[in-house]
Length: 433
Image 1 (spheres, rainbow, N blue to C red):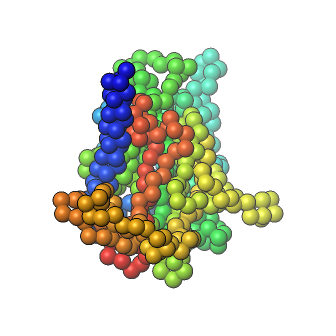
Image 2: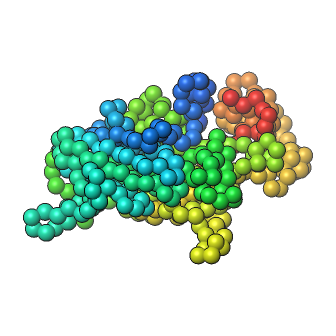
Image 3: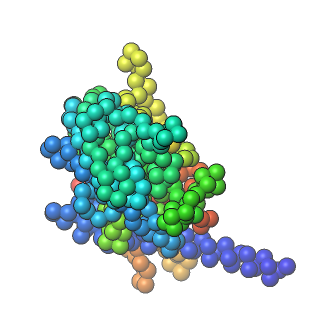
């Protein structure tokens, strides 16, 4: 019995060490590639990447491909590529302006019929006529809108983006299967008030350098395996085992946008912000949440609450304009739902390294970690000889994750799910990379 307890204790220690190693490796990878990713002419390492053009005309190609998960598994997926580009998951983030006539041309390279619906958009046309549900010869509904036929079919959808906010686009054909296979993406409509506002309301102003998107989804690998083999799958057996942010699992969620080792998964979910400052950084960050699973996701950004200012592309206001925004410790994101949340990091307690009387142990008793130094923004101590640190300039890293603990796992492995981090740099100006 003693040997058993010793074994379990050692196993627990190894497990904790492994989790710490995963977090550290993720942050190191983020740090190593950040400077390269921020060079002129390439996408920033963090933040939402828009696919946009002056005419609000897009071509999406439904394709099959594969994504990599951090437990080593490779999953067969369907998704939308940008025009003739390679497969990516999730689909491109389409950014348009309020009042634009949006045109989306769908080409279908999949072996099944498919389509796109645009929840929240009115009067959508399909090949120039109002979209309408499709039925088979037995009168059964097979698609919520007009389809692009399998193996080369096309369909053109048009609508006026008359309401700002965050939306999703997704398959309207057998969506219980096709959406879970990965046929979805984000649609952002910028308000007439300006691109640094979430809605046409002065209280929704944000810092456009800190705009993020969190597309939350899930995977049942057995369903994907059956579809890849051309087999039928009984959806009553559906059981999500992987939970993703922007098509990635932790710690790949920390990798920068367009990380070279994730060629089919271009979008990071790492947030990189600065403390609130009335002069240097007066506007909050914005996170756009999209729920694309069949489960609800209670997402929690640590260290601060978030102020939800929009739901499903509508400002959180009452019928007479009453302010219905809400401070949320955990933001519930339900299937098919979107939420727009503003947040900032403020040193509300006025912490200072001299605040707490702490007896510093003698050198021989010091234990240093990967974030060795003062726990206060901007301060770093000298790293002891032989030690290594991933703290570059005195920044903080706060975890952000799903509060449903099963959904931070990947097929039972802890911390291979909906987990990411927020990096908070010392106040501006600073020497942070």
